[in-house]
Image (tube, rainbow, N blue to C red; front, side, top):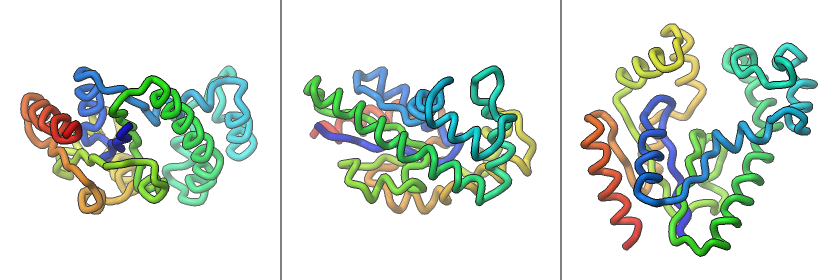
Length: 198
């Protein structure tokens, strides 16, 4: 089974690419979804986060992502602390999902990981190949502000918390450029699927 890592910058269009892979029959393991699953009400991970960051990050037993975001995106130490709590749990859950797909004998699985390089997944023999979705920085900033209803300072903070997109591109096996329209994006994804299957 080929395991393909998919990443990009925040608001680069990675989710659109992931959706296109899925439409073309490739199973997706979504690290964001896994990250939500591991902090569901009653989980040990959620309790650890509550102890670390205070009860105000929990609303009626559920993680308040906006409250947590305010704490960690403006404080590097808090962000590191969060990652120490949550990243090993996410990595373990991803491995469980890959084991499931191996049992199904599927030839290719896409693992969508927003912070693939930042979390060192490229160092862990997780992936056979890595795909990076790239976009012009101005377009990226605009999309992020619109998508998450952020002002420019907040959006730049979130972009700065990730590895520079150009550095990700340099470390990629395949690059998908999302500066064009959806048709152009689809063409690139279909060409890439063909390449991966060879």
